[in-house]
Length: 322
Image (cartoon, rainbow, N blue to C red; front, side, top):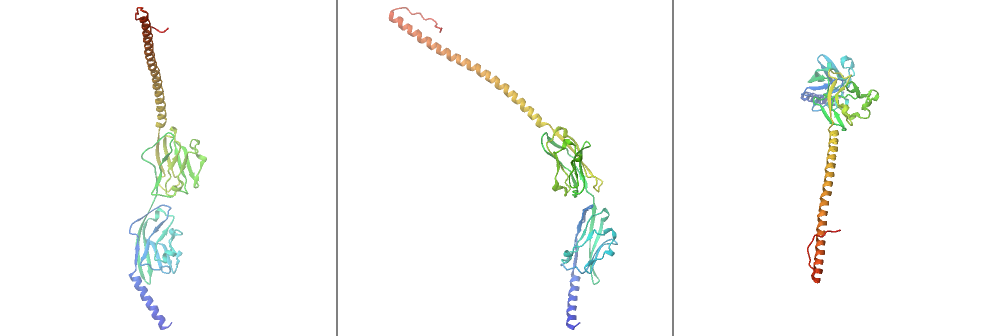
């Protein structure tokens, strides 16, 4: 190796050591919470960014090695069996100084304090991340859901914290009768009671978010009761949620009230017509009497004039039409 090459190498090494010495490694300061069987990203990165593809990156939990990367490849022999095929680092992310760990198919025993380490030439930079793995519970509704006859209603049910149940079975029952069954990522009509056929559905776009609410269409009085949403194979102590549906027959009563009002109005109209006819008859009779009197008066006046001319005596009498 030439003197010039040695000088350049020495300069590069000094610069690299300076960068490593001034380098910071930063982890998430907030505890990380995740759900059983899901996956989680434990964040860890270098500041300023430094290509770490060919450097040593190690994640540990206590004395257990979660993943160890050396000379650009994973050292599978050093990894604890508990984390096999579940821990991974991103090659692209490492090139940008991102040392974050992806941990999948989480187990409750994955809970703990994780250490992220960046090691180069006997210089080690480390930081810590706290992980808690919990279970999702099925949550129904404490308050009863109310609906009127003939309406569509949503019976709310979800998983808390949110959990993807798209690959699990979801059962809705009422009084031990199957209302709706979701199995193999679709509606399974085989067990559904015929009373609910074509009247129920789940929100397919929301199942992946833990929303397993039921849409019940054209509600009838017989639908009233206690509904249970159940995820049988959910890894949780709370797999069921209860929802009470109360059906109000107000819509039916309103119709009866409308019919009663119509009958009342009809009766009132009938009475009005009768009264109108009577009043009209009286008015016509009065007018007819008036014109009869006018006619009689004209006849009397005509006779009076005739008698006056002939010298006869005129005596006023009551005249009636014959």
